[in-house]
Image (tube, rainbow, N blue to C red):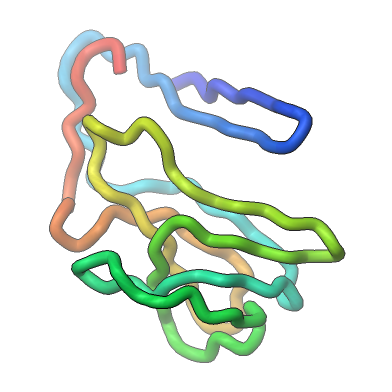
Length: 122
């Protein structure tokens, strides 16, 4: 597997390239992002129709296991960051999962997408 990164004046992007010769089934995602506990966020709780509000929350005040939809806007130490996904036409929908007392977001497939088949040269 190869991680392809791009850096710009105002952002960073990455993607995984498997280089597989045969189809590969991917059952879960291991990507995660850790922020500070004091990070302010604007993110939508996961709901099936993907339409809801983006309330402001501080990470250390989220006290129950929660799943969130992209995009997620964050403010940490006067620095803004937007997390989202792009060019995902052949991939399942992703969202973020967070446990209480943790500042780590785990990237996970939506419940209706339990696996993803990566075609050759993905």
